[in-house]
Length: 116
Image (cartoon, rainbow, N blue to C red; front, side, top):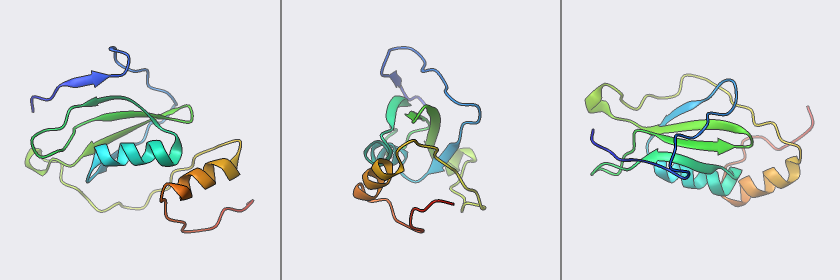
């Protein structure tokens, strides 16, 4: 894999947060753009896509934490696997604004927002 690494600052971005999710997706670059619209994520760096449009790494900052994304590379031992049960929480101060932006960008509502 001879992909070029680019960063918004020209340097390796700082990793934010204590535990950093690294999600393997089918379409990491599209997902990064969607997370920007839906969650206000900023793309800090990425490896440029290969000839199939896949990237091995995208680094996002979302609400003070890092989130990493990658496409699957089955030919290198990293096939796309069905998720095996996990939950991620996004802690925010203004749930109404975050909810409206996420739903407005196309995120699916599985459960309505409510105080729990």
